[in-house]
Image 1 (cartoon, rainbow, N blue to C red):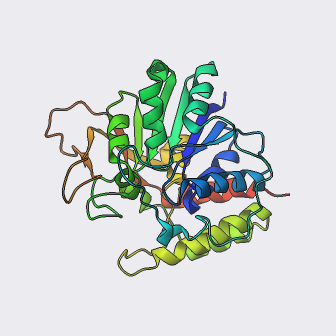
Image 2 (cartoon, rainbow, N blue to C red; image 1 turned 60 degrees about the vertical axis):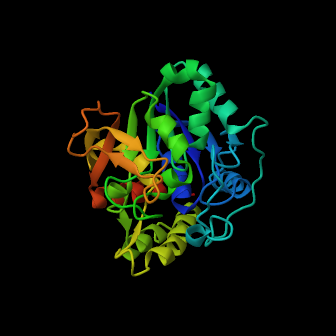
Amino acid sequence: MPRPIIIDCDPGHDDAIALILALASPELNVKAVTTCAGNQTPDKTLRNALRILTLLERQDIPVAGGALKPLLRELIIADNVHGETGLDGPSLPDPDFSPQPENAVELMAKIVRASPHPVTIVATGPLTNVALLLAGHGALIAKIDRIVIMGGAVMLGNWTPAAEFNIFVDPEAADRVFKSGIPITMAGLDVTHQAQVMDEDIDRIRQLNNPVAEVVAGLLDFFMLYHRQERWGFQGAPLHDPCTIAWLLAPELFTSIERWVGIETRGEYTQGMTVVDYYQLTGHTPNAEVLMGIDRKGFIDLLVERVARYAV
């Protein structure tokens, strides 16, 4: 049976590619796509989800927009990474269908409540919507199989020296989620920075010569521009969000550790830090499976093989 999932995202180039990967994969049943503010403002991330699903001709999937800002803080966006639209680069269709009348949290609750099987939530943006779901619909927690998160880091941040962007945007939401007791898989920067797509990989995708592959290649061309900055020391561009979907499809591509993860919400220099008890010094029971390594070649091969399925 395909695994039922909800994708809560803030598209975003890598979010878009995560959606494309998920919807090419019969192992997954994408029950809904919900959006949050993050990589761009909430109106743009919602529009971008609709644009990607229009491209993929998946208007059957319900889409809803969520929280307009973090739980307690003002919104920070990453337009320096993702551009003015949030998906700068390739030509994308305008949406040809509308979002659901309910908001993201209500749509997530409806899907989880109605599902005969536990639902996995894949969260590739700030965790505001997920935190609101858990706070407002506590009775549904038992019906959530797992939350797979792109966020955090054992080591260094990418938005501040200590914090990864998604967690930094709404640390209070992340704190609620990590304290929920729901099984969590954390795909943080430690693994996603190893999941780099290189120029030759982009060429390989472009040579698939289908409309979706052209869009993926265009997204990656633009995404590469920011990551070529010398400060990062990257050879390519890290495909953060697709790691969540790849882990669901092929967990054997990853190595992981079970650890306790706490969220710093008050630190002067460490706000948004995921404090990972790597050496198990605290005595706290682990609350997350933390992904640490990836077979980069296997990951890229999986992405290419799935994008090839969009051939006309």
